[in-house]
Length: 197
Image (cartoon, rainbow, N blue to C red; front, side, top):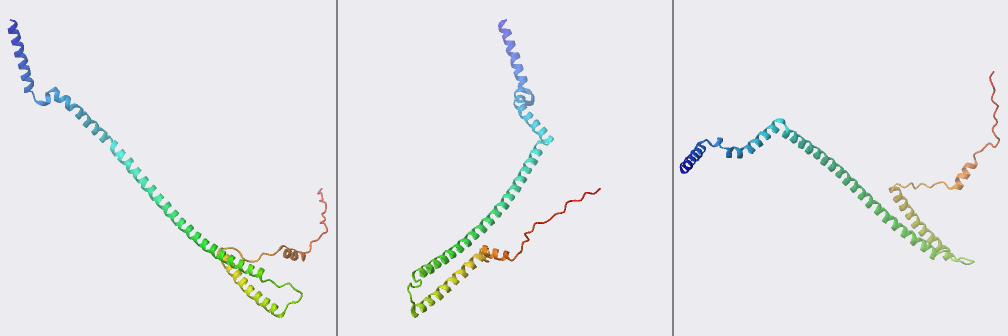
């Protein structure tokens, strides 16, 4: 009996297993459990897609790209402006350096003339000979020509640099000019205000 019961149970088990194997694959629980997460993911993505999430993200990225392109153009414009300003400043520096070099050359020539004047100044003595007077006159004319040449070059350089080279009136000249103006020293008189009745 026990054996018969056991055999009948095994036959039932085999019949159930055969019935399970004969069912189509989509009705088997193992396939359904394996396919369920994939199916849920597909459904979720389709819902998100139809709600416009991806298109909103794409629009957001396009806007960011457009903003970045505008910033790049702005930075390139600023860079070009700075390059032009830098080049202009470099040119100004080189022009001013050449002007400074010319001024230094003129200053050295002026020093040489001043040293020459100090070394060969007028001789000290009660009577000057005619030769000394002639040599002194020649020296003065040469020195005067050199000085006028130096002054003209210096004025030209200063005018090119934008410096006003016109002589300014001295304080004594201003006083002399003002001395012709008469100032009345008598104090001004004022009438008392009338009161209206």
